[in-house]
Image (cartoon, rainbow, N blue to C red; front, side):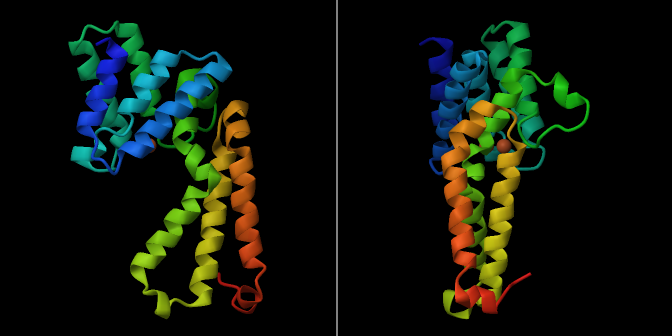
Length: 202
Ligand SMILES: [Fe+2]
Ligand SMILES: [Fe+2]
């Protein structure tokens, strides 16, 4: 097994089945974006496999830092070159939120791509679905008010818009664009319904 195959096998053995689809989606988007932009494909693929790995045992808090450490440890043990290890580590550390200010310019292309690959789903409306599922878990359907529903659709729309705007690369905006526009149109057409006009939400 070469290193890429070992990383993939390690990820499949470590992430729970419910988390794997997200990880495999991020790997696929990261490789695609690397090919479109000329970024280093091996770096982004390894970083994508490891980027959420500490969540399995340590939860979401600071999981960028913990996952980066776990990736470093695993790669160093296998003799992966130090410079390449650090490129993977830097990308994982930067994947959680967009970097703003002067530091943004210093980010490597590989770091931008891992962030974009991780957020493309949200930029295509997955944030809206997440908000609806969360509401569904809190409130039984027959107790749901149109005001609550309208509020959640607006929040989901805003989250989708924010994720799309935060993407670093044109390549990611090109990939996410059709899904993004569909998600925004879907929210807008729902919010145009008479029943929501009568219950405008917050
Ligand atoms: Fe993450
Ligand atoms: Fe992720």
